[in-house]
Image (cartoon, rainbow, N blue to C red; front, side):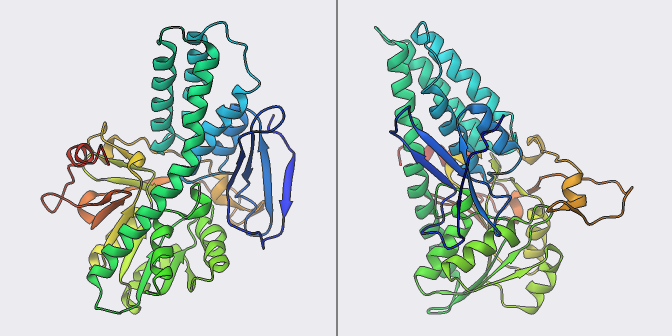
Length: 380
């Protein structure tokens, strides 16, 4: 059962941090994860001691956002390995790592980052186990070193995405103009190791003094926009306004929106992008109003094994998430519910995909050739 020890604090915390990991403590590393279901009313950090603890936090959306899911997943393995074993051999340790990672992938299958992290760590474990004189300790140590590098690398990637996205938006704006941006769901410090992807672009614009305003959707049914993005904007003192998901068309007609920036849970080979439900309709409305539409995602969110969006497995959540808000029923008893967690924005509606190595754009105005594009950046 998930460890119920919590670490409570006021909303005026020193920095927005969804993941707290201490590598060296008595008894092994320690992992605390912010329960995002309680934001913005309370900050509660839950201690994660096992892979199953991590799986439950991911599955119940106490932690969410594709990068954060992967980081919490692999760090839960790091914590568990400190008390697991002893393994009889290097290969036994590698098999244990493979099994635990495979289990973590099942928590939320649409987000690709956890799957990519599992593939990389599994391959590393077996590679280490195949070395001459390999031991369980050497496999454990080698995998642990790579897992602990995830946090630092994610923050650096997010900042690079922020700069690249800000440059792209400002390149379309008149010199000196402050831009107004619309975003969806939560893609900030709470969805990553820190800084954020789409919200990282907004942070970069704000830091340059070139952001006039940001509008964020409430993002039903879990309200990640009204609870989490709004919380981050207020905390960072970024000028923002909350709207309902159904207001985006009216907003684009009435306001001077310079760009839409969203995150991604999975981008496939042709550029089709799965993201929080509502992203598809936002892309359609942006195209109609000729507003540039940017997807912000690290390269780990790009899955070139799938040809197009039709091949993406879409997660369906319990209908009760529609019917209840904070434990209170908001719908008529007896009515049914349909609750896909994600939808897919077609590549031809996306202006550019912003990554830590720059922008990817459609090679023919419609589809992206991301397999070729990623190969060209493999050494960056």
